Length: 135
Image (cartoon, rainbow, N blue to C red; front, side, top):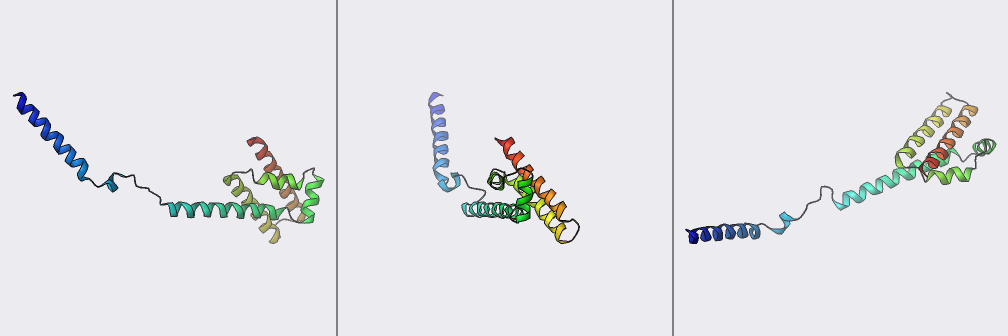
């Protein structure tokens, strides 16, 4: 009885070992859901989008009128532009969208210079507040 039990254990062990060695190692390796090339493309796209949003916000503050309005409100343009890099991607996208809308409304005549400058100052203040809260 003991010898048949040993033989049964040997057969089971042999079958298990045969099954383990019969499976190709490539099937055992972890497969990636996203390929490295796709990941690289996504990182490049995210970086490009972030840079475009930074450019949109920076463009809002480039006019001499905008810089005078910021100075009159007690804000330093250099401080505002350097704080922009401290925004996360979502905050940056939201503020860039607001800047786009304000510029489109101004171009369409829905708002005047004064309103645009108030929006500009509000966006600059938001940038400074958001970055201050993060730190």
